[in-house]
Length: 417
Image (cartoon, rainbow, N blue to C red; front, side):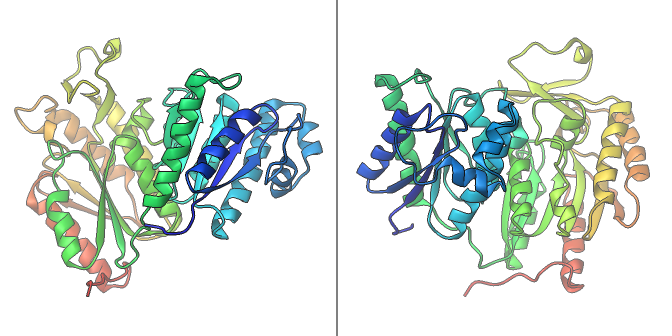
């Protein structure tokens, strides 16, 4: 835990939300932290002097506040201010001047705050007070994997008892998070594994301890939207020694319009940065949906499985599988680092086995054919005569990993003293 007095950067429009910003600053300072306000407003003049005025934000974006105001379009203006807010926040973080971020806004301020929080490194506390917290208006790929949010209830215009309660909680939350934060470990190279829960995918059960025995830190990410976002974020920060992207459910969901997605850039960041990837089509044959909503008519006759009261899945048609396979192949073809693709011929998720609700031999055969055509050289392609949950699949993945370590493609593990 950090023993440094936490420095919190508060982001908001000081011309319209002065009372709220100053109240949060007061809460942080009374709690033993320090706070500095970054003004991202454009047109009005605040009644106090923010530590980082809007002129400095505009300068960080390579322009002036007058030029931004002259754009004459609120969306264009706030987008430019977001660019400056990102640059300034990153600089302050790099200088060690801020340890956490607290942003306040309606849709406009939230839009800007999402850019800033997504740019800051995983592990730095980030809290957004928003009138659209957890709303479907927010695309999943814009949400930082470790972002905390709270609904700005009853506070759109001025302070009241409800608003004070919410803002005080937010101030306390980010301050407490800063005091409790633990730096991401750097002792061992970090390997990311994508998966679903063990009722569907089980390869991480043997892979995780095997990799840890080889001197690696291993993190397994739940491929239900935000998990994939976390993998992409860690890859972007160059914190990963390798990615075992063995569950591509989020990619297939994005192709077919599911809400359970990590956005259009899933399965791209590691490849763009040359990070070694071992990939498999785990759960690429399913489309997810909310259990609590009526099943779309187009899915009415398909094999269906309700995992719980939140998430359910249907099987893809053969053509939908071919579309998903082509997208995967195109993404892997652009990778600048080593990529291996492992195709388990016996099945690609727990619910496709015989007797399970999504068993579909013809669909599986169509997926095999599509992947063989879509995944092309220089990707290293191999097949294993086993189900993805069989030991032979995990053994194949581990054999590729070990060979790449021996060849110098993956950094060697480090045993702890």
